[in-house]
Length: 640
Image 1 (cartoon, rainbow, N blue to C red):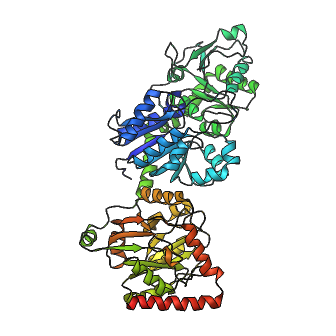
Image 2 (cartoon, rainbow, N blue to C red; image 1 turned 120 degrees about the vertical axis):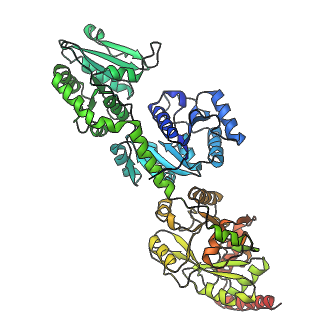
Image 3 (cartoon, one colour; image 1 turned 180 degrees about the horizontal axis):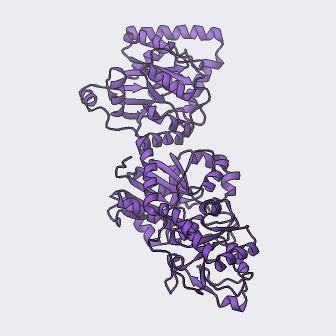
């Protein structure tokens, strides 16, 4: 599937200067994507005040954020992050200035995709996911459980993760863990690695086996490895290089072992890198007990031609092909680790065979292969967006039409929770200057047809609608219907019935948790079939629900609509859509795409109180008498 040039934000939760392996992955991924014609922003916290100031000035300046990009990639530091003390028992909340900067970036930057990595709160990745107006891709890397996210705040985290349009996991073990706590579809996309193009290292007889340990797991992993070395036969020929930012370990070693073990500081004065250590290694040991494994490190070792020796974690078993191209040892058992390491040192044929087995998977680890698969994920997400261009012929015709005001969501006394007679609704609509209204009673079209039959007296155009309650996936409105749709169908069945009638699918108050609404995942199931989405409804209790609807419409380029959702006549006029006059659903949807939505403040408490008085507080006999008076008054207005 061809992928057009895209504007992409890659968001990391780690300070850009931290040297975290995830940042290295993001940086290399960004370079690969930029080489394919995409524009990439790397969004990260930072420890550099200068970089933060420059980035914030660029974000707030409103200019081209890629103007100062290097080879199509620019790093934007959204705020300083002060590392938490080692003794801290909980993560510090994200500073408000960081959150505000992320919101400004996500609101103003012309992004196609926002790719967040490890979007657990509190983090820059989580904040970006909350505020993004682009398509959201999430990648989960570490197969480790986060107690706060999975136990304490699970429901809230699941709600935020619901905004993801695609979920990726670096490893199957990670996907399996996430599925247990946050059910969904996770596609496994392994991280890339620098694959050596050199022939296997030639070994001379008697040459010591070179063993490497990259100190990227939890602290206990290095201690276990050093304890294991005590059990390796001293007569075997081997030498060890430990690459660590922390320097030599306090774990005591025998004098003969100290002569064989060399500690190298990562990025130190000698300039030795992980790639240098792996390039020289025959064996690379990974000894995590599961607290902080480094499966990507195992991949990098295989890619460099080293044979991995790993603790038997599920993710390490996965990366080593269940021991096909590496050896495993029982977790937290230094004696078993020593026994397996001794086998590799003492048996050159075993070492050669395992290295050759790694050759079979090495080609699939390169960055180009990873970028191909990632582009395919992006392409599938982008393909679901609607075409904003519309029909140029219809739009040219509409450009010559007069402009009318429209309200797309209201009810009559044909809804069980509304007492507004059709005549009163029509008279009020005319009084408010509305040229067209959609009558959308709950699970009923009789009110809309009644309004259509009487509309000529009031000079208001009627759109036949129905707000249909689905079986368990909230409500959806059908516009331009010809017959009633029964309640209780699935969301997909309801949408199919609207389409069968030649109608338009209009999603009302989609994220108002006070109403029965489809959740994010349900909307994604029908996103191609949604014709318009209600981005403003004055009856929602919390304004952010409307904001979320607007973000959803923007990311999928769905035509935006609005409606008063009036259950009392006094609610009309709180919102109006100024759009070209139209004839039929084809012209309507094109006109709506050209529209301007206008709102004015209204009191939700006031209209809800009126609704209660009209539907619940008034006795049945009084209701009939009041209805007769209101209808007579409305008819008098129409004649006058």
